Every structure is written in structure tokens, then in C-alpha cells.
Image 1: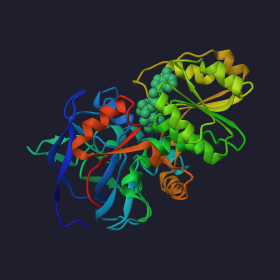
Image 2 (image 1 turned 120 degrees about the vertical axis):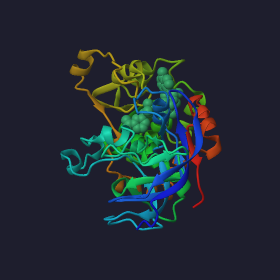
Image 3 (image 1 turned 45 degrees about the vertical axis):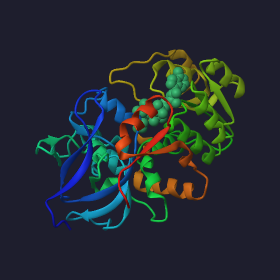
Image 4 (image 1 turned 90 degrees about the horizontal axis):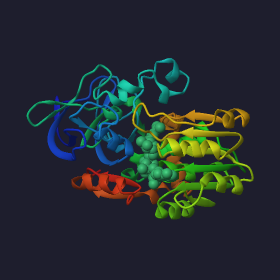
Length: 375
Ligand code: NAD
């Protein structure tokens, strides 16, 4: 239980549209009912942090972002049932646990998903962090705001992980990695012997490649425009790679799969690439859409191509994952050497958070992880 009302923290604050992350001294309140305070060890950086920094998604600023946190529970609030001080946790997206979608195992489509993850405040509309001048900062980004030395989380979105797993590596399982892997395993339900094409070989697309291998797909095609990403895709299990700057991916995929892929995943967020993905499917093929463009973006496709082929287009949030089950499964697969997502990451000290963002945007680093505190 909490003995203090507030804790001094260091947080990376975005003060305006497109502005860099600024490391500032701040304070966070103690956990309330159902909440835990987590000492953050490391936090992955995802494209979604950047699109919010740049205000493609209207999370109010100034704000503390970060939504792939991993750390150690240091304080528990009243009515916390399962977690204890000292537990190692991965923080994931927020959900209410009581709406119809949460109740049927689809928490990623929680009725309160947007306010709990993108409103810049908690489920009651309250913030928990103040800056050095005592001004409130927007927080609870993805129900955590983990670009900070400490983060508050509800017990429901803090996933306990084994202490013998490398905690500093695990944060990205809370969003980007579970999105790609879950899209393949939970949403598309890729089956052994099938063909799968990943449009985009970033952190999400390559996690999908890794998961397609786990699921037993025997033709795994990665499409990207960055040669180093395609080379890594091959190393991770892609049977074929296509540089879509040099080749027409639709024609090549149709040839490789003798008529079209069974499954595809779109993780570039580019409408024209979604069209390529739909066109590269074979009859009864299904494409998952995870790439997130600016709100209001529209895409075109040939209706008869979809209709006559009996194809499915499926939007996917967070890989349809039930995090308390799926994240420990991914940790186990990693520990068995069957899901080597460590090959995607590069570590940066907290002071170099803007370098991490720049390297990610330039395509130099696939999945930056910002090292924030000691265990
Ligand atoms: P990323 O930038 O690492 O990956 C995108 C990849 O697309 C890059 O490798 C890039 O080179 C490639 N690309 C660009 N143009 C291309 C083209 N014309 N053809 C083929 N490939 C092309 O980003 P990421 O971290 O992998 O995230 C991917 C997307 O998923 C982002 O939009 C992110 O916001 C979104 N996302 C969605 C969810 C969700 O729940 N739906 C969760 C996490 C991330």
C-alpha cells in the first residue's frame, strides 16, 4: 500500500506538435484503487508515439507518451488483487474489463478504448502527473505513459512476466510485437502449410513474419522498400522477400503462391499498399489491416476483386490479444528460441530518446527500446 502521496519522477514531455521529447523533473501521484505504481526499467518506442507527438492522433499536449513499458511493481493501491510489490510486469493497452467486448475476450475493442488510451487522462478524466511548476501534464497514454521513471497502471493492463526473462527487452510485447504476432495467430489464424505476405517489414510486420513461422506457414513473403529490413526478414524466416520499389509485389506474390496468398497483413499505413495486399490474395484470402494512417484516411479497392474472390479485409487492434494470456505465451516462445524478437531491437539511454525516435523514423532502427531505470 502507498505511504506517500506523490513521487518525484523524470519524464519525457512533448510540449507541442512535432516538438522533441524533453526530459523534465515531474511528480506522479500515488496509486488509487486497482492501480499499481511501476518503476520503469525500459520502454519500447512505437510509430504510434511519433504520430501522437506529430498530432496525427489528437492526444492533448503537453503529454507524457510511451506505451511499451516494462518494469517492477513498487507500490500497490487498495483493492489490487493479483499483483504484488516486486512483480515484473509488461504494461499494455487499457480496457474497462466490463463492457460487452471485454466480457467476450475482445478487450482491444473495448467500448472505452479511445478514452482510456488516447484521451490524455484516466478513465475518470483525471491526470496524475504534474510538471516542475505544478502544472498538470496529460498522461495515461495507453493507460501508462511509460516514457518516465515511474508509471501508474491499472492492475488489468499490467501483465506479470517471469523474473527469469530479460525485463529490459519485454516492453514492446505490450504493443508493437503483440500486434504483429497477434494479427497472425489470433486474428488471421494462419494455419500450417499456408502462405502469408507481410506488407511492411517494420517492427509490426517482422513480428508477423516471426509468428507466421510459429504458426506453420510454409510460404512467408515480406514486402518492403528498405533492403536491410528485407534482409532481416529472410534471417527471421521469410521464404521470399520483395522490394516493391523494384518489383510489382502483386504479380510476384501471385506467381510465388500460384494464384495468390492465403493471408496478408498491411502494416505500412499506406492506402495504395492496402490495395496491393488485397490484390495479392488468392480466393478466400484474408488481409489484416494494422497500419495506422492519419484519422480520416480513405483507401480504394476493386469491389469485384474482393467479392468474386470471397476475400476478407479485417481491421485489427493490438493483434486481438488478451494480453494476460498472449504476452506470457510470447515470452515462453522467446525463451524457447522460437520467437527471437530481440533481433528487432536496439537499446538507447533515456537521454537519447530523440535519437531513438529519429533512428526509427529514418528506418535505421526497427524497434528502439529506451533504457529508463535500474531494476
Ligand atoms: P515501421 O515504420 O517500423 O514499419 C513500416 C514499414 O513499412 C517500414 O519498414 C517501411 O519501410 C515500410 N514501407 C513504407 N512504404 C512501403 C511500401 N510502399 N511498400 C512496402 N513497405 C513499405 O512501423 P511499425 O512499428 O512496424 O508499425 C507499423 C504500423 O502499425 C504503424 O502505422 C503503427 O502506428 C501501427 N500500429 C498499429 C497497431 C494496431 O493496434 N493496429 C499497433 C501498433 C502499431
